[in-house]
Image (cartoon, rainbow, N blue to C red; front, side):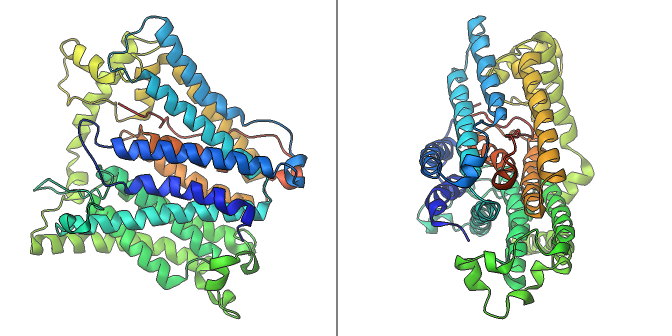
Amino acid sequence: MLPSRSAIPLSFLAVAISLPLLVSRHTLPLATFYGEWASALLFALAVIVLGASAQRQGGSAAYQAAPAQFPWIVLFPLWLIATGITQTLTGMADVSGSRLLTELSLALGAAVMWAAWRQGRAASSVERQAMVDVLAIAWLVAGLLGTLAQWVQVFGLEPDTLGMVSTYFYDDNRRLWGNLNQPNHQATVQGIALAAAVWLAARGWLRAPAWLAAAVLLVSGIVLSGSRTGVLHVGLAAVYALVAAWMARGGTAFGGTGELGGLAGAMQRAGHAGRNPMRRPAGLAFAAVAMVALLLVLQPAIKSAGQAMDWRLFDTVAQMQGGDQLSWRAAMWTHAWAMFRAHPWLGVGWGEYGWAQFQQLAQVGVKVEMSLHAHNAVLDMLAKTGVIGAAGVFVSLLAWLWRVARQRLWRGDARERAQTGLVLTWLAMLCAHSMRIRCWSTRCTTCISCCRSVSCWAGWSHRGSAACACRAGPPCWRAWP
């Protein structure tokens, strides 16, 4: 049961995660302007509320038993801020004028890490598990409402939604994007929501019919997005369901039915809590098979329906078989590598990718679609921050991976392993997203920072272990191009 002392701050965090993903207003030149600022403002408010709540809880036994440290991985964004300052001090041009906004986005990510870490530090193991419930519900709500927006766009009903669904304006090869203005981003949210639905089913929040309805809707949204990365997300969610089934064998990883309380407890009628098949290993294994089966069934079904009703949808399977975008992305990667070779130490600078690409067109000799990112997190980091910035990133990632594997997976109890499995699945999806598509936004920065801090909630109450690194995955923290 989520304690009353955590209900308000965690509610703020849930709104900060889900609401910016549903902002429907998009205008040029920056289509995600309103969503970005909504995320920045809501997470700033969440940081204040979480910090104040943790301060009030500072007298708890769990809090006092933990060493008075801070999450060392906060040095990760601080290192990148220092890299940006160094770029300025060395006289590197800021043509786009976005360097300061980038550093402010990094600072907000660091603040979210610190606030979420402090909140978890003051909580017990059961309370932290309930906090993960809140995050999972936030992602599931965002994914389901985003899918509903896609179906509204399928039938061209946007004018009838009072501005709650953004207008889709392409006539052919339609890849519906919900309210995110980018179909791959929408597919990633839906993939994260699929994993969240598995967690909520294992925790007893969702019974089989409700979980199946959510899965059908989410997978249909991935199909409508036409995203190849979305197909990978379904696979990752299925793998997570199998891992969850293995963890559920002991019966304690996801908590007992008596611990749910509140709405979840109300959903488990007296005498019926043990009858929920989704809390058993067999039910979670069924979820893994069902998600893959739904993708295999809905992909051709929606394609056939689109042809019959003239929806003019994008054919994801044909694109995967043809590999048309490989040469396009290879051209981008060639330009990113050329930038790194020309500026190996500090890169071309935050926000300067597009201008540098334009300047080197003749020199590189590879035709490329103008872009503000390399569509590959590793090459993008090397191109923009050079060896100095990338070295801090990769060392931090290795330190985070080692600490989480040792403290949460190897030494942690069943509940901690279950929480870590879900968060690592979310991070794997964001990692897969940013290795192929640009993932530089305040929305991504703050959500990832929160997830990394959740992964640091090692058993403070009974071990008092030191703070572990709390950020991983590819760099996803840019506020502006």
